[in-house]
Image 1 (tube, rainbow, N blue to C red):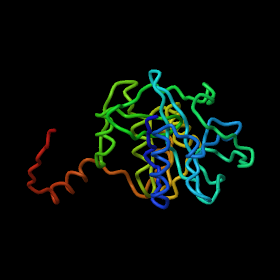
Image 2: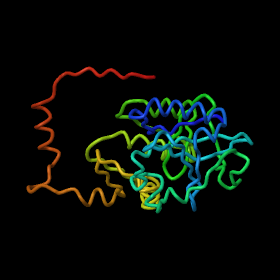
Image 3: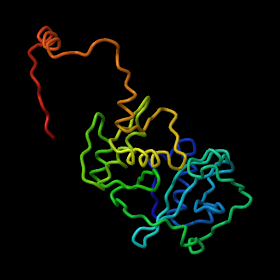
Length: 241
C-alpha cells in the first residue's frame, strides 16, 4: 500500500526502525511489521522494536488503499497518544493482522480529497489534504491575509497555520457560531500545544475586553496639532504579487 504521513509525525528517535517498517508496509508484509489492531478502535500499530510502536490507520480513496502514518508510541506509553484520546489500551488484547484481507471494511476511512502530488496530510477533526495552492499558502510567512469564497478552506488553513505560532494568540470572528466551530475543530482529538495560549473570541468579546485608559476623549483639533508636529515626508511602496 502507499504510505501517507501526518505532518507532525516525528520518528527522529527511531529512524532506523521506522524505515524498516516503512519497507514492510509498502510491500504489504504485515507479518514482518507485526501489525496488530487496537480493540474498539480503527487504529493499528506496527512493532518498531521491543519498546516502541508506530500508530496508523487505513484509508481509501477512489477504491485505492492507503496507510496513514500518525505517530510514534515510545516505551509502550499509549496514554500519551494524541490520537487514542485516553483509550484504555492493553497490548495483550491486540488482534494480530497478517494480511489486508482480514481488515474490516469499516476501518478504511474514506478520503474526500487526496493531493497526489504530496505524501503528507494534516489532521484537525479529520484527515486533511491541501491542494497545491493551499499548501503554498500554508508555508507563507505571517502576517498574511487569506481571502476566499465560502467552502474554499480558509478556516481549516488558518487553524493549521495557528499551530505553528508561539505565545499568546487570538482567533477573532464577527460570528459567535464560527468561533465555537473553530474552537471545536482546533481542540478536537484533545489537541495540545505547550508553546501557545490561544483564545477564540467573538469581535464583541474582544472589544469588551479592551481596557479603556483614564483621561478625556481625543478630539480632532488635538489630533491635528499632534499630527502637524510629528508628520514627516514619507514615500510608500506597495508590492503587488
